[in-house]
Length: 166
Image (tube, rainbow, N blue to C red; front, side):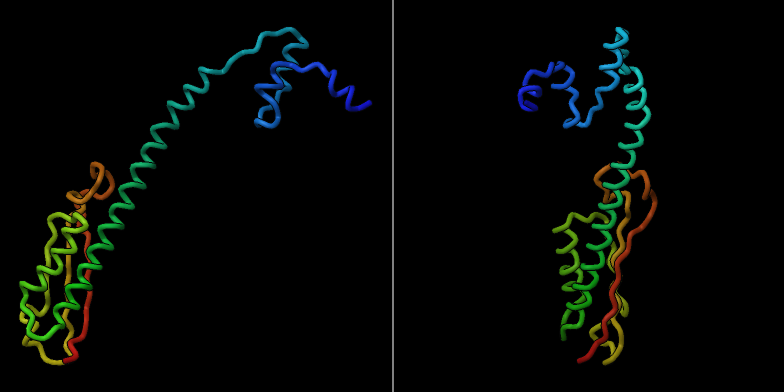
């Protein structure tokens, strides 16, 4: 009996397009049919809400992309400094070879305008148990995917210190 009653139930068009399974509440539609008032569409309010929130969302997206890019560049600088310090610890290595190893990593990851500093400058003659410090810096302005909005005129840096043990 219940199956037969459900089968003959009058189905409204609003049930097909605005049913509860789609997350819509059709009480306003049924109430408007009951009182025979036309449904007022709120398209103007939706456009206004979009005009207010879309620039904020785009700004948040751009900031997220720029922050991720700066984190990537900073990690690349740390990795390049680490690899440069490892190469500098090898006996009979020249500063040009250390610079080449660092530049190779920076070029692979497209870091531009980086500067490399190795302390002490004559690390091959440094005594045993002295620290060799490699510092790699790059400007944030030339290493962004989008125009620099949040990291203008900042310098990103990565450094590594290792003890000479030979």
